Length: 129
Image (cartoon, rainbow, N blue to C red; front, side, top):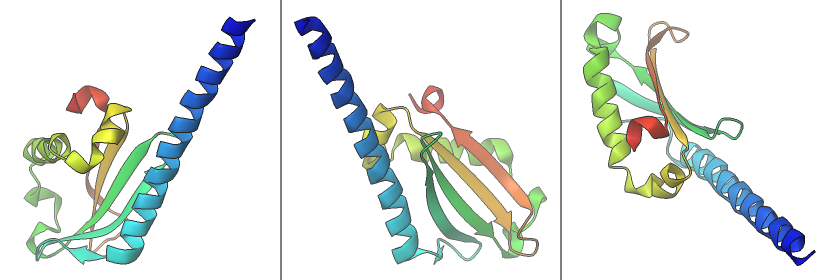
């Protein structure tokens, strides 16, 4: 009987920790967006929002490309993906999330045609470990 109680308590503790991290992630994304966005990262890139999807445990970074970068031909997908992956791997503030296998999704929209996605990529644990 003690084994079952110990198993149940351990399972409950693990679930509570996971929910706590999910809530923290959602709150951080919401707070960052509310306090900082939109923010121009350069003359051609604006960070519009940061989101968190609890269902997939994925952070979303949503950008607008403008000026000379507001075209698919200005983006080198392989190079951009590698630069973003390098950034994820060096993101010390997200270590707790990476330890739990959370994802990081980057979406770049056109300023001229907001519904148009110029570039999108997703990094999972297999990518950044």
